[in-house]
Image: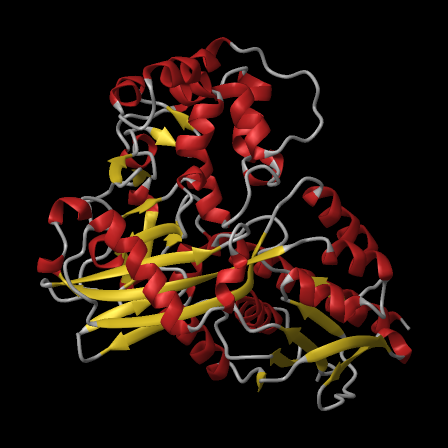
Length: 486
């Protein structure tokens, strides 16, 4: 019988739960006896929250409503969990993104891939930009790559290659909406690494897209690549619920909910203890910190000032989602010809974006109902979260009435606040992560994961958590071997 190894996981979102699940699977295959304690200051699931509104027969998403399959991590995890049969695709008839221009909603050109057009004809026919602005954007093909490899902001990178009008009218609302952030502060290398690489290797992003484009795949030719987005029939919380169920079936971990980890301390024998509200004194062989950057900074303050300092410099934005249910007759159906719209910052509106959940995924509501998800807050308007739920709902409704000309009041509303939930990959982000990673080498037994590292999407969270679990198992195996030799 091998010695029991105790592991703490701090954070019960998708990262923490994935780490726990992967740890249990890998430990079993490696004949390691482990006991996991998972600490979560709120409820399991983090920003995942699906609500069943039985009165309106609607399934509402308060957090993420889908996952991207450009990388396979969530698909592979779903297959392991035996829930891949529950995965559903987006509505193939409405795969379109809209951008607000004054009070009009204009489709993003076909072939627009994040920051650049790959379908020139569609781009030139778009009403989002002036003729001069579109001509300037296409000059990108003749602009030489920058020889200075110092880091640029998203705004600097896009304006240099495509011009200011393209930045203001399309890129800012698209990229800014994803990160609820400021393109004048976000790092191009951290947020748009594939496009920075295109410039450096191909000279032109438009040229690089043209060379790689496969016209036989809609995911490659539609701007938002919505055919690569999926969800679960029962909502995104189904993934969290299944992870928890599988973990319980594997005899672990112990869930310590509403338990705040305050700090960590080194113990004799290379082990670690957690200081919690209940003064936990258990000695852990390894600890996985699946926390927001600000919380990581607090927990690591007494362990290492360099880690704490760099983590504290990773700012996280706050936002809220207001869900509203309307009768379909209250909204002009032509306004719902797509999956939703983003709002440029130059419009000076309170609304960041609106997603049409009941259009995006079938069976989220009855045919005669429409579910809208309004996004407020972000780095430019975080003070709005100080308002009451009633005020936020009223603000969201006023914004939606402006863009959608809604005729009546909603039949249902809910407000979900996500405080410090979206990390901002600002200039110097990669250096901060590298500094944290290097310093962790001096503290064996501590591992980190989470969306503040290198990707805010769910697949990246799953990937990083899986790597953290693998690294813990390898660490424990080395310890076990050393003990045998001793």
